Amino acid sequence: MVNADFKQFNGFDLVIGGSPCQNNSRVRQEDKNINSGLKGEKSSLFWEFDKAIKIIRPKWFMLENVALNHKDDEDTIANELGVKPILINSNLFSAQDRIRNYWTNIVPPHYLNHAVLY
Image (cartoon, rainbow, N blue to C red):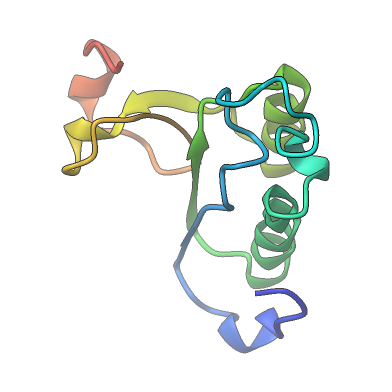
């Protein structure tokens, strides 16, 4: 994804992605080389997703990542994408039983407005 030519995807309606979570995870918080947030080598791939969205300009997008350890990073992503994250246990939609943040402009089904999401 790094240095990809996103212009070739102009006209796509949907872009879905997620950057590696190791630098954002609440696990191993004591090791700042691993837990370095969006400044980390792996989690910095978020910026490529952000670039893709701005170039492709899809109707809909969704970004997935762990419940972030750094509130500043969560706010940065929300500001860049223009939407706040929704904290959902992925077991509502998949075989994974993990709490995840989803930043999306896709309107969730009406039942999510009243459901316990995690």
